[in-house]
Amino acid sequence: MRHIKTIDDITKDGDVEFGEGYDFVATAEEADAILMRSTDLHGYDLPEGIRAIARCGAGVNNIPVEEYARRGVVVFNSPGANSNAVKELVLAMMILSSRGVVQSMNWVRANADDPNILADAEKAKKAFVGRELKGKRVGVVGLGNVGSKVANALVDLGMDVYGYDPFISVEHAWALSQNVQRVGTLEDLCRGCDYLTLHVPSKADTKGMISTEQLALLAPGAVLINYARETIIDEDAVHAALESGKLSWFAGDFATPKTVLMPNTYITTHSGAGTGEAEANCADMAISELKDYLENGNIANSVNYPACNMGKARAASRIACLHANVPNMIGQITAILAKDNANVQRMVNESAGENAYTMFDTDEHLDSSTIEALKQIPAIYRVRVIK
Ligand SMILES: NC(=O)C1=CN([C@@H]2O[C@H](COP(=O)(O)OP(=O)(O)OC[C@H]3O[C@@H](n4cnc5c(N)ncnc54)[C@H](O)[C@@H]3O)[C@@H](O)[C@H]2O)C=CC1
Ligand SMILES: O=C(O)C(=O)COP(=O)(O)O
Image (cartoon, rainbow, N blue to C red; front, side, top):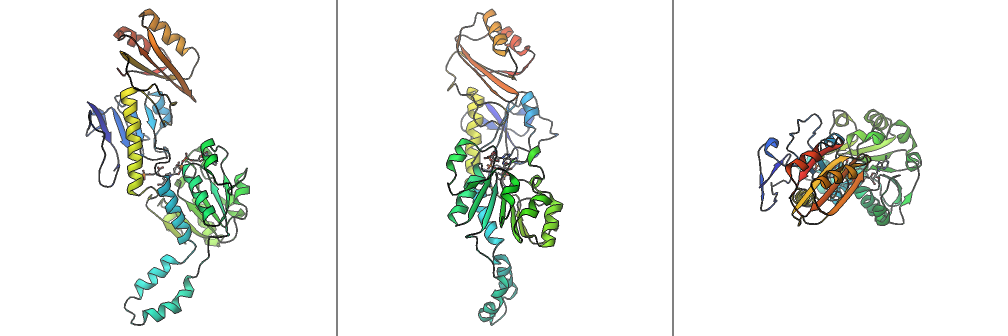
């Protein structure tokens, strides 16, 4: 039996199914793996027994992924699984920020006992006149799973769409409409934009990337949308731009002590991924990643270890070594296997950044002393006897 600890509400109705051979445990100390969403694990006392963590969602800034890699803990996310939900809410926010929809509905509620409301509404409506998205210039920062979908949808709405992403993947470049015009710098993107929407991860080079300088380049009365992370914007600069009228509206998903005090804002409760469909998609992807890792050692969609797939574990034994990406690891591993006279059927070695993964199948079970010797190789973080 393998044990799973869930952190956060994975789905609204609590539906999370791993199937046979798995159960849910109350504490991480009892668990082999963690399934989670947005809880911040920085400073969390992660028990030694945890071998993997799957984040149902895209952003992993809430998890110390490099520290966990050095402890031999593979961290997964579920790329793209909630991106349609975010896209739809971003489109809604762009429309709500452009038309007096909320203000108009509030007027109707406030005047519900007016017996002439139908006629009075006709007089009131001029206060809620807005502008259309069609023909306006929009900049999309980050063209990954969410940004590429947002950009394509905005093309379909007739906008003049520009995109900036120096690290765009081949897959997302292919998925992008040819009507999305790519620009080489953030400043060129911002220049003259009526709308700017942010879809980059929270990391060192995106922290505060939208500040006074970038906001100054936007068209007067521009709308800023941030459904990425609160760290991407310089909140004081956004507040000042709203006060001065440089920004007409700001819509964001992060209710920070500063955003909630800004004028002309719609701030939601980190609800970008808040649909039943997105929750189910994320859970399905994360669960299958965890199961394949726990049962077969295969890695897909990890953010701190390379992808590796050797199919189902069918040989007598399968061993996985999680280690630093340094020279001579295979040499050291095979030297130990040679001493045990172990016949390796198949071996795969993959690396990603500072971390690497070596997995092999052998004809017979290895001696416990051989496993112990593997663990003693200095750059090895963890050895897993999968089978
Ligand atoms: N509000 C919500 O509920 C949700 C928020 N998010 C946030 O949105 C972010 C993006 O999500 P996805 O599109 O699914 O992730 P993704 O990983 O598919 O796309 C991120 C894109 O940003 C680009 N990028 C990275 N650094 C950049 C930089 N300095 N300048 C420009 N582009 C840069 C990457 O090349 C990549 O194409 C997530 O990291 C997360 O923080 C994601 C899903 C739900
Ligand atoms: O996927 C992401 O990055 C998100 O921000 C979604 O967060 P959530 O799982 O809804 O708490």
